[in-house]
Length: 361
Image 1 (cartoon, rainbow, N blue to C red):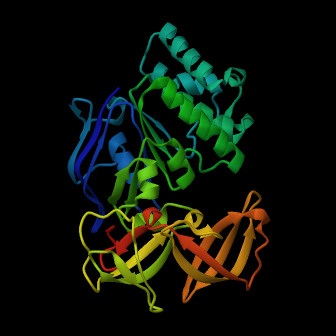
Image 2 (cartoon, rainbow, N blue to C red; image 1 turned 60 degrees about the vertical axis):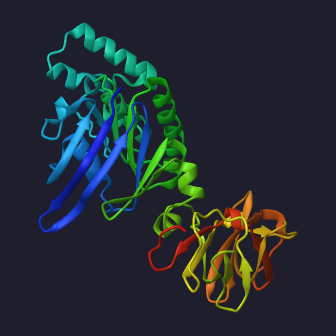
Image 3 (cartoon, rainbow, N blue to C red; image 1 turned 45 degrees about the vertical axis):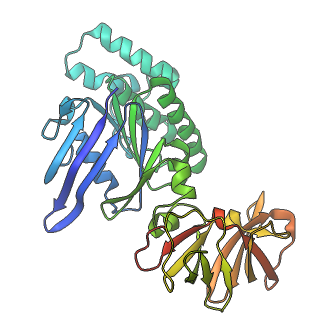
């Protein structure tokens, strides 16, 4: 297993800087997910680690080796692409063994490595088929197998499930998680899918415009987002935001635009807030309390505009002044459009951000 480090890495395409002075430390055996929207730099960073993209400044380290200028084949990594990248005229067996044969590895060793990958991925029945005879999920298993036979310590996944339907994505996501548990190798996985990130990762690096906004465990990213961007990006539906101003920094009392004042008792913060400071209070849709309010909860009056039934639960969209919020409730609750709704939130479950900087308070 190997530590992977990006040290002050910068990447530019002409006059456009895609990644600037980025640092990332990945421990041995970790499963790291690079999460972000298209164009945020996550695939570019993965390609830098793989050696498929030159960097303008900085260094890439894998284990004890500075591999910044090493060829991809010499970095000890295996890569799985979104497009599968299988040879169409070769059988599965030939696809798995091709790279090993080109490196002139002994035949017995090739057979042993292919057999191990086939057993792990359970694709023994597919060995004599060509890619055109495989489903999307089967092709992706073969693509993963081609990385496995290299017997490397670092595996790189570039949105490997994006081309699959929802059911297959779920099945392969579980298989990739089991694969990591079995191998214990360091894995770096790129995706824009929050569910993949939350379920697979030991830690998530949330990226925006070439900058890592937060690098933490999935629960911390979800419950304690570092800034307004992370709070709004992670979660579906995204976090609700209510604007307010600080009325008393010591007691954390805030005032809303409609004139209401209430303390955010129970919210964890390191320092007093500045009186008059403009803030946003973030509440996850599932953290609204409908009905009897627990002690210390803050009430909010709203009007339901849309009810979405999703099976096990319903999603209520409601207006609070000029703001739309989303509230998750039990699906058999019988709410209707136009109905008045009183909801509550506990400050301890909320997130508060400085409106000017977007940073968590």
